Amino acid sequence: MKALRNFIDNVKPNFQEGGKFAKLRSTFGAFETFLFTPNETNKCGVHVRDAVDLKRTMIVVVLALVPALLFGMYNTGYQYFRMTGELSSVGFWQIFGKGLIAVLPIIVVSYVVGLAIEFASAQMRGHEVNEGFLVSGMLIPLVMPADVPLWIVAVATAFAVIFGKEVFGGTGMNIWNPALLARAFLFFAYPSKMSGETAWYYNYSKDIAVDGFSGATPLALANGGNYTDFCEAFFGLIPGSIGETSAVAILIGAAILLFTGIASWKTMISVFAGGIVMGWVFNQFGSADNAMAQLPWYNHLVYGGFCFGAVFMATDPVTSARTEGGKFIYGFLIGAMAIIIRVLNPGYPEGMMLAILLMNTFAPLIDYFFVQKNINRRLNRVKTKSI
Image (cartoon, rainbow, N blue to C red):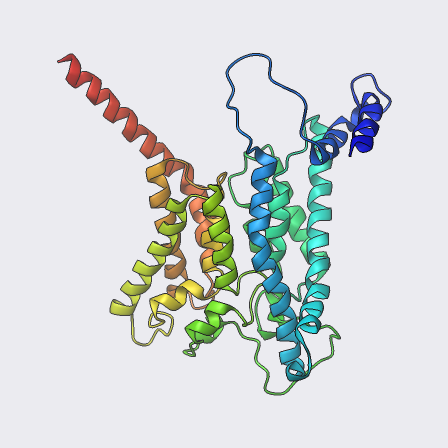
């Protein structure tokens, strides 16, 4: 490492002001800070001193996503061999290897396209390269179907980074969650790639057809009145987006985020509370002819992207509410809205994506009211004391 540090120090003047490659200063700085902790210090003003910087925060989130990623790879291979009828004749590593072949290219495309745009944007603006896409680059593949074409992943990623982040000023300035924007773009621009039975399993040879095989997701089945067993959905060996099927893997990630203090437990718990309350309300007062209204409330929590969205999407510190009281309202409305969309819109049984994007829009308004409430309370306190 000392030799690498010396090499970096020797070439660094070429990338500083007046050097031959000064225009690439942002790119060089990104690679340097990726390898080593910056040796620059602030020399004026008051600053918060904390070992947990943006880079470490993003790395912790990526580590929390690893259980969902690994299980998603296994489940992709599992669904493939289940579809071909060869499941009983293959072992764990064959199943996982097949899933790895399917998922890894999606991850590579997501990072290559997203980081290329991030680097280009930083160069044009003369800013440092932010680490925000370390998380978005992993989230985007996990909310995609395993069989999505790579060129669509590239287009959706470019749309999310350009129109979801860079037009607002980059990491920390975006209004909506970039990964959910990529999924929304895919859903509305290429709906056939996000619906139908063939979207949810990896078709390696592109010519496989097995009679009697069904790749419908639990939400699609529930919309027709067929409910997937809770335990089966909880453990996750079911069709669905790559990282969204296993509540067990997602909850392991949730434990990491909560233990490290990266995610807010108030937001996370509130999302589940909102889903439980609204699911129970529909169970009690919903129409008997509406299959989704009669779906047990606890099944809503493990179907589709509800659990994944509650843990990794709703808790995004940039796009969620930031006031302590606002986090409860924000999270509860996400959970409730997701169930409302599922039940009342039969054409779109999955409602988590739209619910989070909608509440991303209103998060600043929620914070505004709570801030104003605190200001008014303090003003009233001062007036009372003066009297």
